[in-house]
Length: 481
Image 1 (cartoon, rainbow, N blue to C red):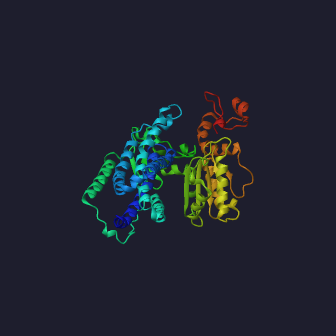
Image 2 (image 1 turned 135 degrees about the vertical axis):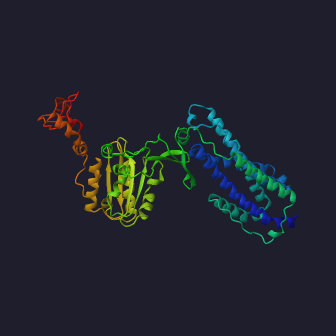
């Protein structure tokens, strides 16, 4: 018996190593299932479910260790054969649990469904842990070697890499009897069959992507998997994105694009607006978005754009290390363009993001970081931060200021700014330049007046208005300008 155990020890260690990989990989797969089908923050409870299965297995091994030692081969065979069907079966059963995180604060039965998750997913972790523990028991004299392969396998499982290692020189002497071969093949076939037939993740009806799938016109135009998650892109007239679009676009763009943005969903969360390819007649629309600012500097060869939400939440896009990596990918004249919503009152997300940008520039040993930043915004809309690898030149600043005047945005900061330009007359002047053409026909129709209308003088203090008309409300065109 001892010689047989010695011959089989290499095979047991190999199986032990592969199952160590499998269990960690399965744990991560279950986390991904929660992220895509429900919400990612509930995926963290998979760790406690795995620990529950391991704890139950440890209890079993403690009370039945003598029986397990006497029948160690049977325990190893049974647990290894059952592990595959248990993993696929638990995964499929969990998709039918009607857990709804939205109702957890008002419906106590949601806690029951969480318990059901624990019961279902604890089974495969329990079986896997029994196998792991049985190997520890059978090869206790090689505990250090066993623990080493357990840690290596668990680490490799995290990146889904399987390594086949020849551990023992007597590996080829192992012979798997026909009955065990049939059982192993059958277990693998059943596990794969389960996943093929019922392996789709059941997405919660309260996930944002579920709403998109119910739009009358929402064809799926793209689907893929990558390290960021499961990616879906939908096209629909119900998506309305125009981050920071200037009001002047409605006057200067003859053909406003319809459905200019597609909806991007990552693990069912979104939508994130991504612009489709515009026709030649629609391309002028881009000139009135803040993200087009770097294009105004034609000599800048390369830049990156990021359009996102409030960087006060846990978002690793807006860390100093992240910004540093973006800057390192730029060429010497490249620009990093970051556009975020600026609707908080009092404003706090943009100053925090600016602090992060400055810290990142200092991490890169860039002297005088204030010469590398240009910031502009629109009231209760978006703020854009341009970060240039080299200092902004006077001509570049002039071009950007011309662009801001064109779209009626305000410059918050740029190198050499004398004072904050938060001035209502500045905003009014920008709109006047766009809408003045509308006043010309009115002047020709009604003639010039030397004073403003009574409502304008009383409410806004206008005087000496030269473009005034008698409309039904008797309001001065200056009110519109």
